[in-house]
Image (cartoon, rainbow, N blue to C red; front, side, top):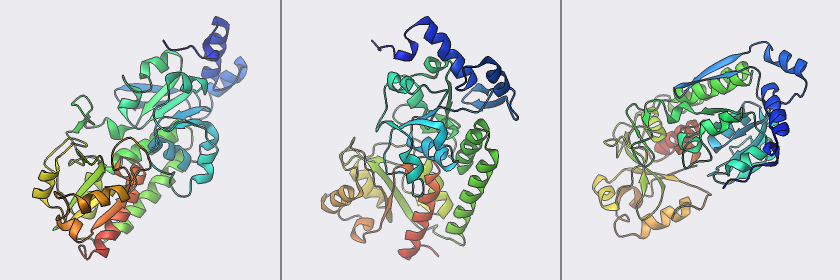
Length: 346
């Protein structure tokens, strides 16, 4: 049974907690009223089929995935973030100092109790599964305690998360979903101008990286993790967005599953021109690092004769770049640059 955290042990403290959440940290009713009528509020977001209404900007946010954390940090909100969790990679360059000021609750999913101990007034996540059954807790569990929740649109818009595995997409992911998350969070925290500035900078990076590219004859394969039964990218997630941006082809564009597990014999039949490799620092699957993946590819009988392996055409990406996030732009930049280096794109 879940041990009740100290914050919620008595009815009196429960009432105090509710007031704190309503007033975003103020214990004074008058201050709570002024916060609720602050300029720009209330703000209502349409999120995964439910409306979230904020009467003031969050002051104690917890981000349950690295992708959502890096958006908050990029928006200059480290001072309003009281916890992060679920990391696959080192933090994005330029955010090291901000990230160091935010407590890491867990490298993977924290317990519900651990999150509550941080006394959040707002919880955000990159994945529906993080705020669902089998994840940290359901959205309803948080909301019963007065804690608002938000899930990235990149993981529910046009996506079926009930189809098994990592879900499947009926519609290809576009960077508009990532930009939408940035704008939503910027609105929630009352920093819209910062959000627009960040979106503009990301769009400019994409345009610069892909200007004049022609890689229409190039097939790419994306390998996230696991050497025995590898997770390879289907058509329509973040790798699909990268592939479309550089004008290439995905070797497994015929599957709408987000990360299907595909055997190496099928990979050999497809024989991709380039292999995009997830270089992860977590330790959950076999062959997490790029070094381990390349060692496997170059020694395994089923893979060592692949064109990409023989010609050592590897592109190394962070796990976050291969998930829908602001790092997907980094993925576009790196794939575009390497295709040019290989002489495969004009």
